[in-house]
Image 1 (cartoon, rainbow, N blue to C red):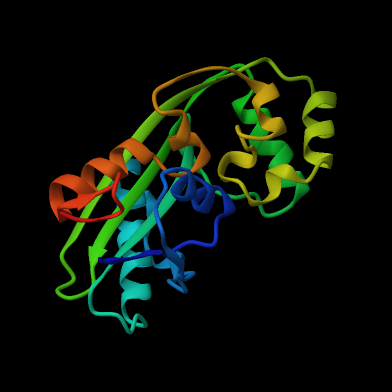
Image 2: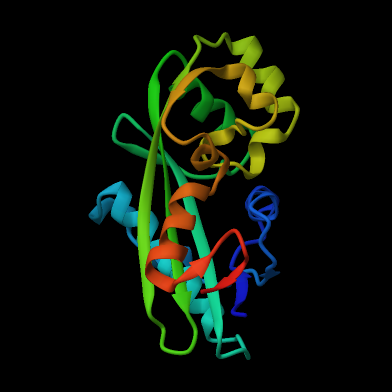
Length: 201
């Protein structure tokens, strides 16, 4: 059985993999994400580059030579601007204000890397999210919950952030942080891994 490693400390991604019934180990990547210039790449390519960077960083410190590393990076894109995690409460307020009443895209780049030969498959998933018109008071109340502080785009759709959302078009789990269906497709087609049995075929 191949060992699965999640190159992320995100509790949301851990929960999604657990819900898929997969056994895995967590190894948080120490990759320098600032080394990838978002201004020079389409958003879908940018998130894949970050996911590959994270997987590569973890691969260097994995002792097991028969493992599959799963990594991901999620960003919000609105009006041509990429929104990552807010720096502080003021930044979170500004992000949410910019999303109010608009449609934005959530992009997650995922990468699966095989440690024995560094064979890697990357993909990007896009989901459209439609926000309600938000008053400054409502935004401020949400920011005060501190939920936005570790979330791309300053909201978590799986938490109180769902109250800001009018609807979505695409994969809900992609907005949470890991498109499970796309990941399963890569594991099965490219790595011959049976996600229902949790092992290689």
